[in-house]
Length: 92
Image 1 (tube, rainbow, N blue to C red):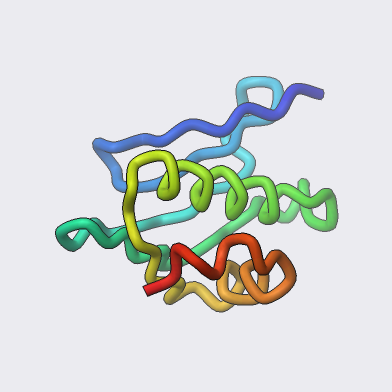
Image 2 (image 1 turned 90 degrees about the horizontal axis):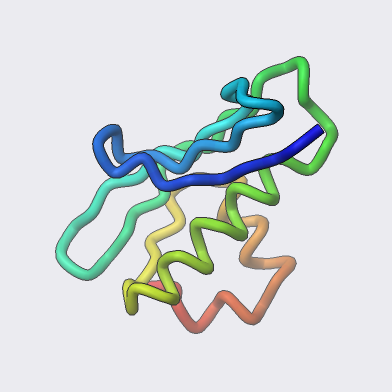
């Protein structure tokens, strides 16, 4: 099983693929230098495997690398940030 996360800028979402199959996504909106992380969704077939956390981490790391502030509108991402305080510095 190979997990790959990419930023699909055309569709404004981070995508996680397992063995080539779309297993999860995190939708976002760009507003200036702020990325609003809107909704995380993982296919039921992959539930409980930590894929949502992988998406959140990738998105937050990407935002930091690009110098963007984060608006965690998605409750899952907000909880992830609560559990990983190193990402609080990027929250708007």
